[in-house]
Amino acid sequence: MNILLVSAELAPFAKVGGLADISGALPIGWKRIGHNPIIVIPKYKGIEEQFHILKTDLSISFTLFEKERVFPIWTSTLPHEDIPVYFIESDDLYDRPGIYGNPDGYADNDERFFVLCKSAFELMIKLDIKPDIISAHDYHTALLLPLLQFTYSKHPLFESSKGVLTIHNAQYQGWYDLQRMIAMTSWNPEDCLWKGEFNALKTGIDYADLIIAVSPSYAKEILMPEFGEGLENVYSQYSDKLIGILNGVDYALWNPESDTCIEHHFSKSDLTNKLIGKIQLNKHYFEDNIDCDKLPLIGMVSRFTDQKGIDLLEGCIENILEQGLCRLIVLGSGEERYQSYFNALQLHYPQFVSYSQGYNEQLAHHILAYSDFFLLPSRFEPCGLTQLYALNYGTIPIVRSVGGLKDSVQPFDSITQQGDGIVFQEFAKEALHNALMDALSLYHNSTMLQSIMNNAMQADYSIEKTAKEYIDEFKKLLHKN
Ligand code: ADP
Ligand code: GLC
Image (cartoon, rainbow, N blue to C red; front, side):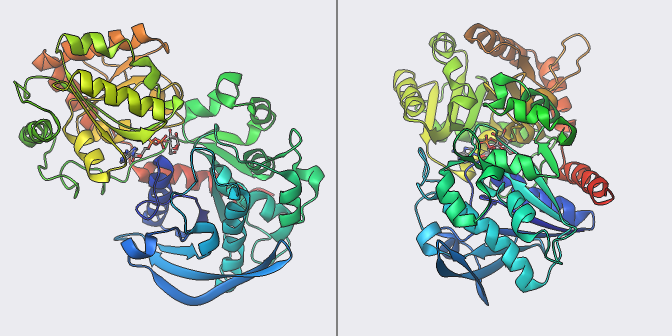
C-alpha cells in the first residue's frame, strides 16, 4: 500500500507535541509491516540548518489568489529509516518562528496549511505515485480531504484513493474566513459553510472516508458536548465512520536500554542505573540534596494548556510540598499563567520543586526515565504519549481516567498486585490529592513498588501494533465500493 501522510509536525524535524511523534512513528510501523509511506511537511525555519536535507531539482507550481506560485521541494528520510520525507519550501509562509504562531495562530494559517495540502497532491503527480491512502492529521491537513473530493478525485492517480482523518485533538479546529477560503480554493461555499465561517476540521470530517480518534475512549468522548468542542453532533452524525485506535510508541527511541538521550541505561532486570539517574537529576536540578535517593521524585513534561489539568495542582500539591514528602520536577512551556505558577512554586519550595521553562528534548527523556512517578492530571487527553513512554521506564504514571489515559494505564490493585499506575476519576483537587498520597505511600512499600514497576515495564504499546490496526482499517476501506 502506498500511504501518503501529510502533517504539520514530524519528529525530529518539527515538533511541538505528540502529533510530531505519531506522524513519525506511524510510517515506521507501516514500513516495518511491508507498506510504503511517503511523508510531506513544510520546510520550516531552522530545519535546513539542523538536519541533513537536500534540495531536489523538483518544484511544483499552482495558482493561488490569482498568482502563479512555485514551491521548490527538498528531501530527506526519517533518521535510520528508509522512509522519504518531502519538504515544501515557501519562505514567505514557513520561514517564521514557531510552527503555528501561538497563542493566536498566524493570520494566514489557512493559506499555510492549504498550500501544504495542495502541494502534497501536486508532488504525487510530479513523482507519479498513486497513493492508496491519504492520511490527514488534525485540522492542519484535514484540507486534504475536501481537496481529494473536489479537486483531485477524477485524476487517475487519486481516483481510487481513500482519505483518512486522524483526530489528535478536537479542540483545535482551524476557523478560517469563508470568502478567503473560497477565493483560494474555488470550492463551492455551500459545501463548506459551517456556522457562517469555514471550519477546517469540520470540512475534513465531512469528506473523510474514515475518521480515527487517537484512542477508543476519545472516539466515544467526542460524541459528548464536554469533549466534542461544538462538533459533537457532527461526530454523532458520522459515527459509522468514526473509530478509535490507541497511539503507539517507537520503542527504538523510548527505551531504557538504548535511549540515546540518557546516559545511565537500565532494564527491568537491573534498575540500579535508574536510581543513579535519579540522583544525578536531583543534583542538577535542585538546590540541595538531602536524602534525594529516598525522596520520591514526581515528573511532569507538558505543553501548558488548560487541557493538561495543571489547574488541579494549585492548592493541592502545596500541602504535600510543605511536609517535604516528595520532589516535583517540571519541564514545559505555554500559557503564561501556568509558567508563573511553576516559577512561584519553585521560588517558594526551592528544595522540593524544580521548574525548567521551554522545550528540551533531552531533559524530557531524563525526567521520563529517572523519575519515580509521572503526573498527567489531564482535563481531557485524546491519547497522551508521555504516560506510554513513562511506563516503559518503570516510571509510574499518576493520571486522570480520561481519553487515552484511561485506555493505557491500569489502576494498581494492592491485593491482586495487578495494574501499572495510579488512576483518579474526578477532575477535582481532592481526587488528585488522594492519588498523590496513594502514590507516596506506595513508594514506601518496596514489595508493592517492585510489582507496579514490573507491571509497568511489561506493558506493550508498540507502534507496530497501532500501525497494524490502521492497516487493517485501510484494507477494509480499499475493499469497499
Ligand atoms: P500533547 O501532544 O498533547 O502535547 P503527548 O503526550 O501526546 O501530548 O505528547 C507530548 C510530546 O511532547 C512528548 O513527546 C513529550 O515528551 C513532548 N514534550 C512536551 N513538552 C515538552 C517540552 N517542554 N520539552 C520537550 N518535550 C516536550
Ligand atoms: C494531541 C493530544 C495528545 C495525543 C497527541 C498525539 O496533541 O493532545 O493526547 O497523544 O496528539 O496523538
